[in-house]
Image 1: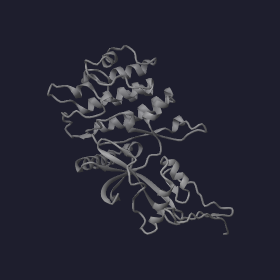
Image 2: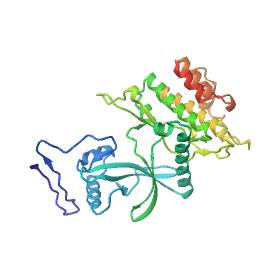
Image 3: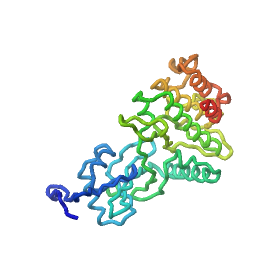
Image 4: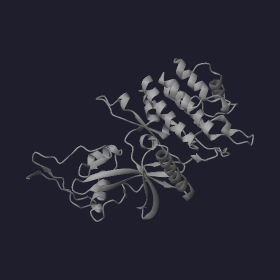
Length: 348
């Protein structure tokens, strides 16, 4: 094949040398799945990862020539996101030198070993229980865990939990866009109840359910909107999750405050049922989906917004949605509706 176009950037003043070849009648650009990118088509990576400097991508690509395949490499030396328990990096590795395909992943570097051990264990529990019970929960609703790895960031060796990169947006961003139909609410919330219902059945509670921890993926139409019947959620961030075969009560106040159940902040000394507190969080998520905001800031009795929320007769024009929110956000945890019952209600 004849090369008809080539471009070189000289390696002077920190510029990186590379060549981009386009051959006659063949661009050598084959459509692959969403997480595999062409190494020489750098603009795809720049768009997908929000303006990572081009010289960084080129430098990493050239440095990879001296490495073996199947090694995860950080795209940047600084985290993409920083949370309370961890830092999130984006890693990549070459999976086919001949076609120059990238595979990308999310990598969590935890602030202490206990958090690393916990989240790694939770992933393993979900996968094993899902397979043992013949459920497809792990495949459908949980990002795949590729394993653990060590990588050098700023010349420091760090241990990472490597997780599937989800090409989508958070439910929080979807809510903020106000571009969420009644049927989308039904699809997303039914899926969320299915996965949380499974968690509770095996003794696992999430304890930090909120729109920011729910990824929404699916096919898009020509206007960039999700096609409703293709929507799939993925639940993320298990850093505060709790697993107990005997479903013991919790005594630590954790979670995101405007999605927390009020009993979490009780000073009774009796602790709280984390599975029931997850149900309250589901109610606040549903409220947020239909009203585009959470109903209060702090779930305590001296907060006017909270009192207004629990005393309100209606939260939405839909009788079904109103009933579900009321039933999930019952002040008495023992009277909250189960995920299984919600799924049945939404089927009608």
